[in-house]
Image (cartoon, rainbow, N blue to C red; front, side):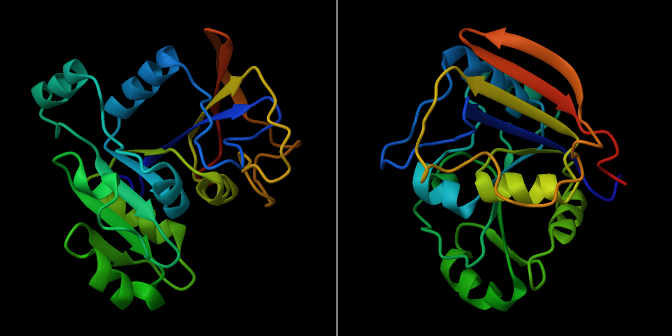
Length: 228
């Protein structure tokens, strides 16, 4: 087995690079056709990962929704649902959040080792809580997931996770959907934050596919050399 999973990163953003706006309500960027595409991608992987801010803001379930795809996973000898993974800097998550209460599947929360005891006290009834170094070491996270049998990992947000994974050079595929409108809000969360990225103007990503989905467009990039 590889020492870390193949990593796919999936995101939707506005034309001006926002993945949400600053209002309390979640900004809808994708339509039903794109959600079905995302569900298909989810069904193809072993685990799905988000950051703590996404859990707090969006309260996602992180499930494969199509019963046909769930049945196909079972027929192939795979678990019906994905392993759910959360990275948190403090572990101060609500154990009643839907990521912990929906779906018959495993859950893992990675935290800095210095916060392991506090996070374990709070979340041990609903998830495996793992210390991953101080500061949190993404490579330790990926190695632990590989040891749990995760061969393909899907990262779905938000800004901090996108920035962490892409700047670390561990993303193998980027699935980026662009919605045809502007947000125009300086306080809106962006696709990524400031960082040094290995795929800069001198090391361009390879475009594997560009496909319209309704009035949106999917840009599928292969990040060659991300494992070096």
